Length: 87
Length: 465
Ligand code: SF4
Ligand code: SF4
Ligand code: FES
Image 1 (tube, chains in turn blue, purple):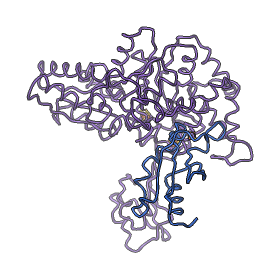
Image 2: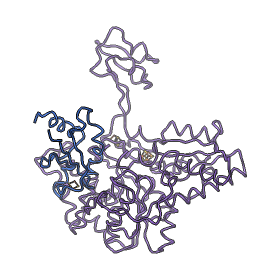
Image 3: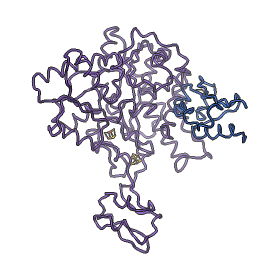
Image 4: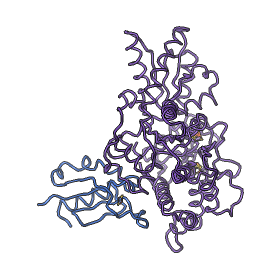
């Protein structure tokens, strides 16, 4: 199975609006998911422009799926679904 | 940790920077509250109109205006902005009171009480009744009732109840304040007594309604940059790990954002160490029985001045790293304006006394970077002439100053001994500790005090605690 690819936006807007709390998400992964998830810190994903600021922080999953107002909890849940192949 | 209050504050800051840069701030300002809380959409408080009123006050604070000084409720934000943006160039305006309480946002939290809740099952054992030293608890109709006149809020019943039925309610701001400076006024709304306040910023962090606000100099800095003034960013040592990337990348990001030059305040800390060590040795030679306490935490210095007059002579006279950093900047270019960037509310009061032109919090710096689309991790590290030495970079941590002074002193006088104690965070308990040191009951010769537990990186305006 391909690894789940998680791109956390570390652009300054997302960082200020919550991404700072997700920087260590890899350490929060349960042991059995390790090696199945690839986490990368990205520069601005260009989603925070003007009106969409309220949607920050953004995370991109598997190259296309966008998670807005991401939190460590939301992200871990989604990663879990993908790792376990539920969705 | 991020919460709703921090989110909205930062979101507003970023919006302000973006609108400023696109030249539309004056016309947009009064629309922001409506844009963020349109009618027919959910509100955070009773209705969108209340939300909007408070958003207006938040924006006022971001313009540096204090709610307490508001005289005309009908004055639009654009009018406040116009006064700011077109004020006499060169005029700096570090506010006298860096905090402001937004009355309409304050929920007037009920006074602290110990109360029994619905979880009470009126059990047979009644450990609450048996453990209350004041016989304040009775069980009436199968439910425990606490007589508020007798209760001394010791909390014994809280621990005794197996159902977690008894709780203590608090007034978070009052509970957080180490000096009793914030209290509800005759209208039941929190107000700060600025004669007592030491600007530690603890209430600012504690209030769940974000009613305590910082008066920002964000617009002043943006306007000065636009006027073409040379602003030098002086970045506090606490910046380490606050942003992604290295400190040198953060310096580069500042330069990219429009500062004419950048420097680490840790270079100033090196000078503080040298002078403070010499001062300490001199004091000990004069009187080996005395003690000296540190002067770099401005909330601590404010605490001494306002509440502990007996200690004034014990405070080191050595200037703080920020003050030395300013000297370094001014020696290089007397016309440059200085901007201290840190995690601290109280630094704003020190900056005012010491002619530092502006203070920005890490949040405000972050907002400028976000508004200008500068990502720290994408910046090439700034070519610092030399990195500050590690003990100076460590100043922001609890024990950092002690370590620096000890290292310096032992390099001069082999076998030098320091009988040092650290007060790691000011609260009501540690205030008592300080008095014990002062009276000689707990002997010490070097007393390091930091208002924030762990040090500046846990300051009220830090991004990552
Ligand atoms: S914590 Fe203090 S300032 Fe905040 S809502 Fe309660 S009483 Fe008001
Ligand atoms: S800033 Fe500190 S001293 Fe001032 S009112 Fe708030 S908690 Fe009290
Ligand atoms: S900073 Fe995250 S999308 Fe722009």
